[in-house]
Image (cartoon, rainbow, N blue to C red):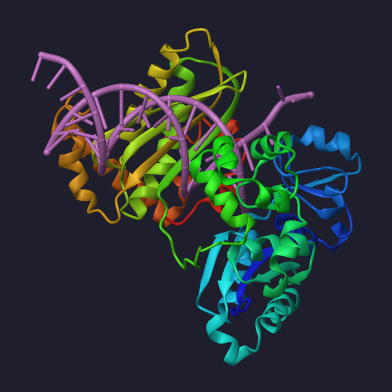
Amino acid sequence: MATTATILHADLDAFYASVEQLLDPSLRGKPIAVGGGVVLAASYEAKAFGVRGGMAGRQACELCPQLIFVGGHFREYQRLGDAAIKVIGDFTPLVERISIDEAFADVAGCTHLFGPPDEIAKAIRRRVRAELGLPISVGVARTKHLAKIASQVAKPDGLLIVDPEIELEFLHRLPVELMWGVGPVTKARLAEMGVLTIGQLAKTPGWSLERLLGPAAGEKLAALAWNRDRREIKVRRRARSAGAQSAIGRKPAEEHVFRPTLLHLADRIGSRLRAKSRPGRTVTVRVRFANLKSVTRSMTLDAPISATVILAEIAGDLVRAALAEHPDEKTISLLAISVSHLEEHWDLELELPLGLQDERRCPGTKIGMARWAADRAVDKIRDRFGWDAIGYGSVTLGTSRSVPDEFRELAEKDL
DNA sequence: TCTGGGGTCCTAGGACCC
DNA sequence: TCTGGGGTCCTAGGACCC
């Protein structure tokens, strides 16, 4: 194996919690959780008690009575996340950002400037610590998959370089759940076959994996287990869908409940789609019932849409259809809308005539024109005065926002 | 014991076309 | 009329990731 390890995976440690401990030194060394009703992030001190992101706040308190809850400084997360990625970008333009706090990079082309990959990795960690005050773990390997695993193993605040000579030795000792694509279900299925480590997975016959996990997953996992990962660094990939959801507690499955919520969700999505001129053709809704079972309904249109009200109406039709098929479910706990089949770049003015082919939904061009103009007006006001300055139902919904909008924005992918 | 929100990809069946 | 095969799109559900 002549090639060298030039792929880096960098991952800020317990990111939100680390930022809070940075901003308020009295929190350092203590178990803290960002959030309230739901734990959005936990510090390492809290993780030691079993506190995890996504956990209910009450449950977290039971696990760790001295847990300190802090409200989030979402602006700071965005700023510091961007700054950390920018440090990596100072070494190479080949940076693939995965999320607010995580990125891959290929440094093959810049070693003549900055030294070997391990020196670059050390420099990145040093600079992020010195300039931003944050711990960041880095894995260096020949493939993305291995670099990612290396950074996980290196955590917290560590650096791990996987020499190409010992790749499989390193990989095959590790448990299967460290692999990309192995979650709780796959882990359990593999465990039933007695497969606990990546080494055992590698020795499992291909046909057996494919029967268990399907052709695609089986083949992918086998390839990763032998470190045959061909994925390259993708500097920018466009989003394939945009969505929004809202957990609403337990509410009756009735029009007066889901209509305003759907309008609010459609408003969020529509304004994002319009801002980037990326309307979509497929609208999907998800309804989760009180028992946490959920169903989806979708509809693909002939022409792409991004108008808030049209989006909301289609979503309403789909939700009504879903509820009609589940007459026994009287209570819903979550509503979601997602738009996919996004156009690459679209002249939104075209949406008007094309979007009105369905006469039942939008009888007459005048109404369609009015809606389109209303969206334009709302978008403009928001550009100047902020999102909450105007909109559909955001006031009436105020109390039902379980998570602040700023937090939602952190998770939004660039369209 | 009852977890939020934004995403990606895969599967399987059916419709439809050639 | 019956039979077959391949390709594409749509829909619903599910696993997984951050």
